[in-house]
Length: 123
Image (cartoon, rainbow, N blue to C red; front, top):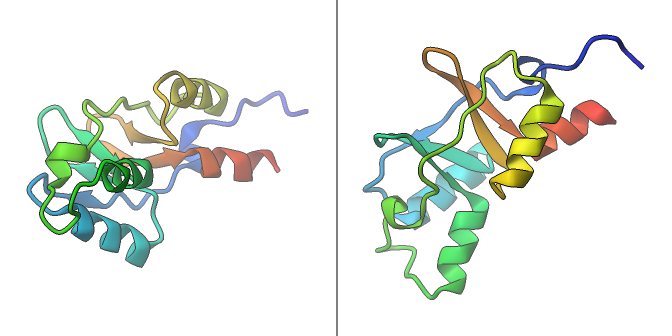
């Protein structure tokens, strides 16, 4: 086993895709599929994220994805971790906040770390 704890910055996806809160759930789903992502950062104050789970919940609740906005289904506020956060702490936060994605931020947003990123690093 390594003496070095793996840090979030070593596993995160550096491409951070953004969506506006007034966009539709359908647009968010299309963007996630097109880009192969599980979450998008939403430009609100405080920042939020919209995830595949948020979209699935919206569908299960009977919301029309062509008219429901991201703002209605997003997770806010988005908990963020710094790039030097150990991966095991990020995983614990995901469990605590019941999410598979956490934005990575220093002075600005740098990327996103997902449970899939963590799992990939562990294998």
